[in-house]
Image (cartoon, rainbow, N blue to C red; front, side):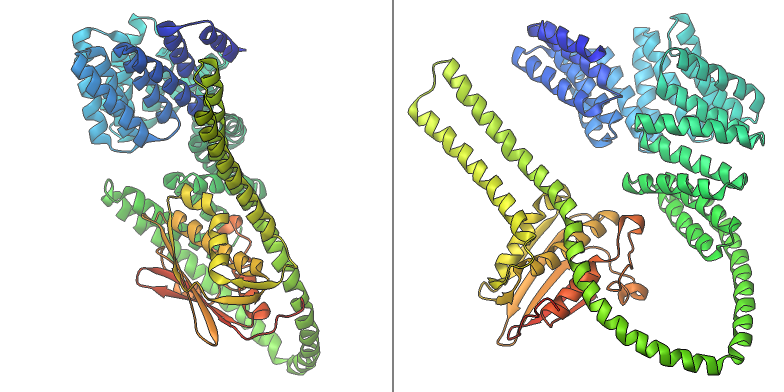
Length: 638
């Protein structure tokens, strides 16, 4: 209903009034729907540019910066804040200059650049003191307090929060309760837990009565944290769950993973291990997907605690090591001394766990030796039986691999459908624009044969592109499609199928090779192998944060063999797992991977085409090599 009020006002307005109504709508959407907020702000910006209205343009800059900020796109937010600062300087509008500095301070704070954040906030304060703008002073003081609190400078944080509260009370601003929450954070850091708890509880009630859900969830998180410190674990668990569900509903990914780690830790302390793992698994998946290294480190530490309590010592060690690496990366420029202390502390824990693990292994091994000493004859009988079972299993596996190959192709279908949906968006948008231009030309008596023919031709071109895309997709899933085919054409078709994923990651791909190389068989199986290898390369390069992502596919042939090399400039594969990556169900992607992709690729090359598939690390990345004999007979599905 609220959105409808804004939309009705926009539709009933014209000119400058319409632009202001759109900006009001953008402000309303800023936190709940940042993407739509950006679109609305751009509309207002277009109207203001056409009208040459500098004030509305500045307003559009403000809302574009805030919408990108709340959407987590800090680079874009900073660009719009810079536009705001530059334009307000030219126009000598000091209030807008102050707002620009306040925005830039918030952005750099989110990027953990505390020194630059403080510098920007202080510049904003100088301007607002001159203007005697108490509302904006309140905002800047509160932001400065948050920075100092995050830097563990509690006294400085308390001073700025008290200045913010003083200004909020003078103008009776509704933000005074949020500022009191920040003062409660100071009390918490001073270990005045009961006083902090009282403020947090009152704040949660205040926000709930006013339906301010995100602040209510934050207040509940703080309440649960105090309960945990006061060793009231059951209360902490129940309140953490409330906050977690609210952050899930709000899709606040940072707070979801932060709360999930805290809730998991509390459940471990209550020995509710199965429930703890559920929350930790969900938090880990989100933190990894959204690239939240600090939260990922917190979840890993909770995992280490969980596995230590359940006796899974090796898993606990692995999680501690990953936690240390993430913390070292995150704090390498800010807290080197703290990192050394943390690493020393965790290494001590690891050595203790290692000793426990070795003792346990020695005990188990001794028990096994004792058992084996009296069982050699029985093992011989078992060995004879296993030989026969192995022979039978080989036949079953060959049949199962054919089925897995089909299943693997179907698993790609989901990604392909998503890719097609995105590939169609652009031509559909173009068709929409071209259709609208024809209608506009008709309405303004500008439609002639030449214009109509040109627009129609462009629309047909887009439709043909969409038709080609769906034909490629349809052909990919034909399992009984046998023919003589060009290897280069199969490679190009593979690239067409993953075109959207390549563009989404801004990855460059190039083909080098002979156009005369050809094979006989099902071209879709070669396409399936190449699509899998490209997808794996894209996922690995994105996961490792590789810049300037590149994939090079080379093909060449002689009288006997065709060689296809797929090279990517991602990180090399660790030597200890290089020989394992083709094994079924082996994956480095955790829950996101099936461990079947590379196994099926090798099965297709070796069983369907009687070739060889290998992988090797290069100085600048990883290369998969397919070597396929030309003069072969295709298997009849066996």
